[in-house]
Image (cartoon, rainbow, N blue to C red; front, top):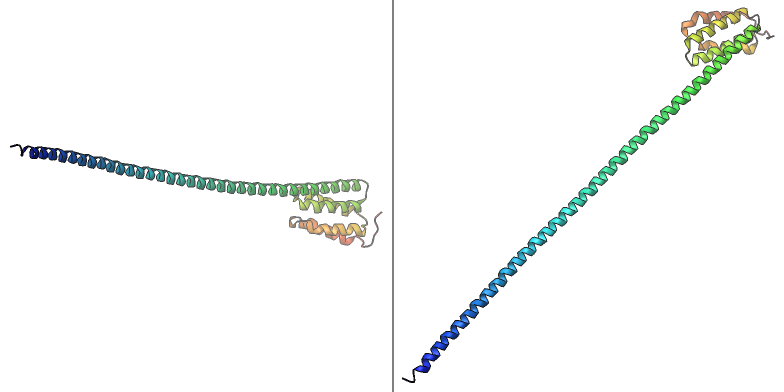
Length: 209
């Protein structure tokens, strides 16, 4: 009877010990599982964060590249437009310069023609018909250059009248009159022939008074 009591006690203590060990094992496994899940979640979160950071970096880099490309395109376009504008302005300035030069040259020729016409009138008024013819010849050349048909016709008729009144013509005046004949247009062919005929009738070596 007394010998069986220690065995029962040992069995009870053994069962209690086994249960405690099982609880510890279960708790350890539960703790490990929690740690494992936490680690997995942490790794997953880290990967997600890294992926997000990488995407942000890539987008920022792409955005920066897009901005730089846009700036480059805008700069190139502005430079091209500025170059075209500058070239256009330069072309217009050059054209204006040429027009001004032509206008000034034309004004000068017109001035010379009017001056010759005034001297021709003055010479004719004094009866210096040879000198008047020379000045009318000079006026004809200049009026032809500026294509003033009405004044050219008037000068040709005046030259013809001066030669008609002229009794003698110096060599210098004769050369000037002959030179102007090429400036008389075809429409005034009849007047031109009359002038040539009068020149032939004047003595070659006469001196101008």
